Length: 185
Image 1 (cartoon, rainbow, N blue to C red):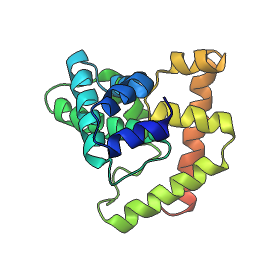
Image 2: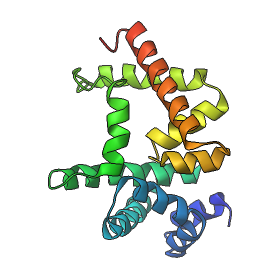
Image 3: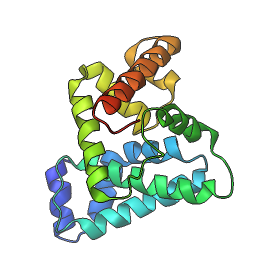
């Protein structure tokens, strides 16, 4: 079923909308949550919460593309759950992704204000826009969707070592960009 028809079902408040959303985009939603969360039950709850939040936001929203919209919701909910779980125990897989980005993203800066957060977001978007399509794909899949390096290597028909080196260089390039723009000291 086309995304536009699924959105129409949401606007009609038809429960079939959730079924069709799950059928078409469920695997991507589950993978997004599973790459961040380690517990199967947490992933299932995150997926359910994603569908509930989608149900509550459409209407008035009419997202395009739908897949990105629901995956963003799943990502944000998984991050929230991750932080809640992290207070109790460490999640080695996602901690690794965060540790890799720690040198590039100014965690010690006061990013609480909306203006600073917008500046950082705009800078990262400019950085992503400057990358080749494959580098942007690798960066987003690793640091947004938290895909494992071995999965990225398989997706790009490359070796895990080569992907690790490329990701390291991309992080260095981001760090240099943020330093030049005064967002990282």
